[in-house]
Image (cartoon, rainbow, N blue to C red):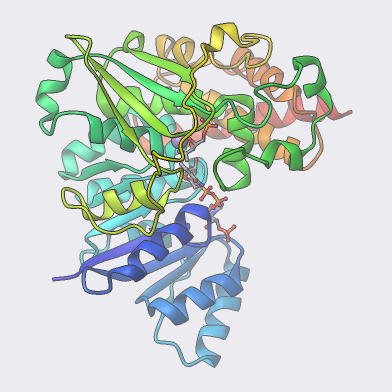
Length: 396
Ligand SMILES: NC(=O)C1=CN([C@@H]2O[C@H](COP(=O)(O)OP(=O)(O)OC[C@H]3O[C@@H](n4cnc5c(N)ncnc54)[C@H](OP(=O)(O)O)[C@@H]3O)[C@@H](O)[C@H]2O)C=CC1
Ligand SMILES: CC(=O)[C@@H](O)[C@H](O)COP(=O)(O)O
Ligand SMILES: [Mn+2]
């Protein structure tokens, strides 16, 4: 029987790559539902191609527009307009797998719904796990869900670990996440004051959405990924390491107790981890080009400490610091960073103010121990409000 899939965030970079892989295997995969925030025309085109049962848009205005167009095009898709529409398509009894590809904490509630409903949950939306933390993991356990990483580093780690998670703690010495260093790896740190959103979004190796691209430029992406790895693989924060590898050929590594290192490699193409998540434990064609070892000129590595850190990437330490602090700290950090990145993309604050805004918000919002979705969203809202005030002061 075909695997029925809901794609949350189908109009984004991960969403489009997911549909590309799905379209290569019509005998294995069937699209059950799609969702977007504002891109009505693209979602309409996806509905025409994949004929899903349901489609959801984040706002009522866009949902109405999509529903009218779907009707006038004679398509069978039903547009669900309800405050919990994303949760509905993520937990529907006829869904097998959910691709979580919404950006930011906005994806948390449907992820939890999918987890509680015992779905196979393909997690690209790293912010959902960074915010959800133990509440997220508890939902996965209680719902009997299967959580599969899509983030390239975490897919690489997952592919490099033994099949049985019960053996990980005993066998693994540490996990080494690779970081490209982003577009500003070699720029004098003082010049970062004046970079534009276009500069920051020009990632050297990956074509991605704007938010994650800015995160790669500040190294906040690696902060989120260290926290994500902590929750996905259950190792101690001290067992998580980051090394700069500018070519993004090795996607991450696992170092075992005997000092053997297992790495996963490939061309930088998100269709590889997406295809692995979709087909796990099998493998299917992804559409990615093969890594050509005959043409591969170099694979280099640099220590972050030798690379202008902490001046260039002052935020990286926040990963370990927030994991050592009260559990709500990662919620506050993520919310602050989402507000800061948006403010930078809207040219309200400078690039070098993103880190300052994150620090100010962490100091201003008291940490707590949120133990439910409501408590997580409440803390997230408090942190956003505080961060917005800091952003307004900075831009004044
Ligand atoms: N891009 C990549 O290669 C990688 C991405 N990731 C992670 O995957 C996630 C998605 O990233 P990416 O695809 O780059 O992001 P994009 O910005 O390209 O896409 C985001 C998707 O989410 C939708 N969306 C945005 N805001 C909301 C909201 N408030 N409610 C509901 N839907 C919303 C967008 O709709 P619309 O298009 O209509 O605005 C779009 O479909 C992020 O968490 C990112 O960190 C992880 C590894 C690699
Ligand atoms: C493709 C992917 O998973 C991104 O998270 C990518 O790894 C960003 O790279 P850097 O954050 O290392 O620049
Ligand atoms: Mn990544």
